[in-house]
Amino acid sequence: MERNNNIPIRNIYYMLSYAYQTLNLSEYKHIGVEKFESAKDLYAEILSIGIPVLIRGGLIREYVSVEESSTVIKGKIDINSSIKTNALVDKKLVVKYDEFSEDILLNQIIKATLVFLSHSAKIKQKKRRLFYGFLPYFSGVSDIELNLQRWKNVQYNRQNIRYQFVIDVSRYLFEELLLDESSTSQFMKQVQDEQRLAALYEKFIFSFFKRETNYCVSRPQIQWKVDDEFTEALPIMQTDLVLQKGNKTLIVDTKFYSENMVSRFEGGALKQKSSNLYQIFTYLNNWNKKSNEIVGGMLLYARTTVLNQPNHTYNIKGNQIFVLSLDLNQDFNGIKKDLFAYALQFFK
Image (cartoon, rainbow, N blue to C red; front, side, top):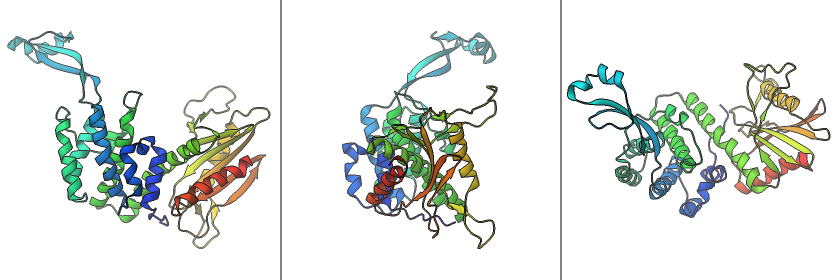
């Protein structure tokens, strides 16, 4: 594995601040000037601020279905269940009704995260005590076993979107601690770390261009140009980022890998990853191009420690394709400068 995992913590903070607008609120301002020993410390500090913010705003509630045996009729009576459970013997009925409750998945994840962190030796004692002190606010929330599937089941809407930042950071921290405490091989730990940072890298690149430039920024799905309208089982073409200005459109696909180029045999010449080139070329071929529109593609890798990095421009069937790498280990001003320059290569 050639990935340089020593991305400066300050740069992880900057990436988070772009990916999540919440981090720019006044409550978090001091984080930008603090020095952290590890990403774990950064994530823990964010949660120590973010969770009280959620508590002060009131834990979100949603309608949840409740089924119980009761002497009081409310909601709908379930006759079959009443008979099967012998509830009638106790002069009760099984009733089903909706209750406006804070005992929902989002709050359950936060509570379970607090329990996990307050008992983790990897978290500094002061923070453990702080996290433990938040638990009484979640007394009406059920205890659940924390696992990564919990986060995959989360769905956001306009009412609960304020939770997203805290929920995502709690996952980043949980994964960090889970890997530290597991017997997973170093190789697999780096693979999993790479997958986690890849999601943040994608969010950061999108949000950076959205905030810092005047391009029209979007991430549309591209429809297959089929001849008979039959698209069953075809993969979804979900773009990471599309930049548009005037009659020019640049389709960007972000990549965060341990190896950005490959060779067919040890010591052989490094080549572009064919699957990535095929992917961006497929996007370009299926883009619904207007009559005077100029469309280009870009593969934007996060730089690794290997000396030879992608820095190429190709013209294939009238399409300009850039294959570039971004150094996340440099000063953040350098990162910004590079991103501006990369886009200008196409839009100049």
